[in-house]
Image 1 (tube, helix red, strand yellow):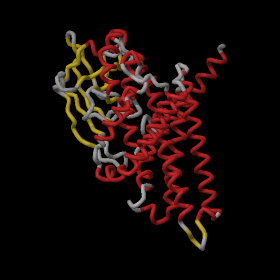
Image 2 (cartoon, one colour):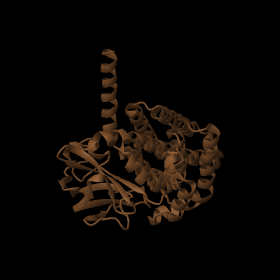
Image 3 (spheres, one colour):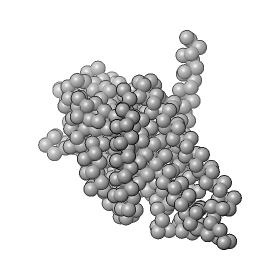
Image 4 (spheres, rainbow, N blue to C red):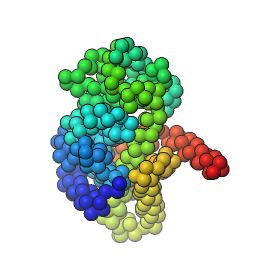
Amino acid sequence: MATDESLADELVGTIRAWVRKDVVPEASRLEHADEYPADMVAQMRAFGLFGATIPEEHGGLDLDVMTYARIVEELSYGWMTLSGVLNTHMIASNLIKRFGTDEQRSRWLPRLASGEVRAAFSLSEPDAGSDTQAMRAKAVPDGDEYVVNGTKMWVTNGERAGIVALAARTPEGITCFIVEKEPGARYEGIGVSRHIDKLGYRGIETVEMTYTDHRVPAANVLGGPDGLGRGLHFILSSLELGRINIAARAVGVGRAAFDAAFAYAQERETFGVPIAKHQAIQFKLADMATKLEASRLLVRSAAEKFDRGERADVEAGMAKLFASESAFEIATEAMRVHGGYGFTTEFPVERYYRDAPLMIIGEGTNEIQRIVIARGLLKRAEEAALG
């Protein structure tokens, strides 16, 4: 169901105003210090953003994905890390919303919607990133519990999250478990083996997590007994939302980089005129603006298809592929427009330049996106031929 347009515009406008007032002035300082934006996250919780796509019956805002994508763009315009705080939370929430049992939805979604508990998503491993078939983490049944052993890599929000959507092998195949690690839950055997330092995307923890004889109740198998062995199907379906998030945040970073370059080009003078008057700079600005607009339209296409309940793997892959590559190109060109100043920490373009590559890699590398897109197109052609 589509979100009322006027309400969507009002909410997005509120987020935009907050980002300009409170996020933009502080983002570079926090980012350089690699400091978690606790106050900003608290404000996001007050806005209800942790329940963005969760149904109203469970306390969420029940926004359509198009409105959610617009919010992600605004957050990323200010600081891309803020959208990362939301992304894995929303992927896990979407998994529970779409594939959880009624009991699981009632049990977890209200607390996720309020932001009382935040979620992480754990699929990748040190030796199994895009190659999910190489997954080694195992969950062995033992009475009414499963004993989990394995190591997971690139877990965003892994330390602060109270819930982790975890993929592990069971006798039936890859299964998705909802692991509770909040205070009061049984989380013996879960450890953070290391924090991963990053080029950009700072201020948010990315960790390696280990599971050593950790016990998960059988009731925490996503989808109940029918969910055994179906975890990969659940996860790949929900990654469509994650890829729309990545594409939307790429639009936000690209827009911030373009705005910075456009403003600077009108202020900086060489040979007696603003550099925006020079054809070489005009060509850059024209290409940047065109790629930015095309990226936004691809995000809209994927979000609208997702909202209609249709399979959006191809469209989400296209949006993620094009928008992320464009964001990196726009950030690079913004740095070049700034000249030597673009290489300093005095201007935020260096942050955009360091943040942009994350979108090329996150939620499946762009090489994987090309495979997803091509296979999706071929499958659709086969289905069309069969009528």
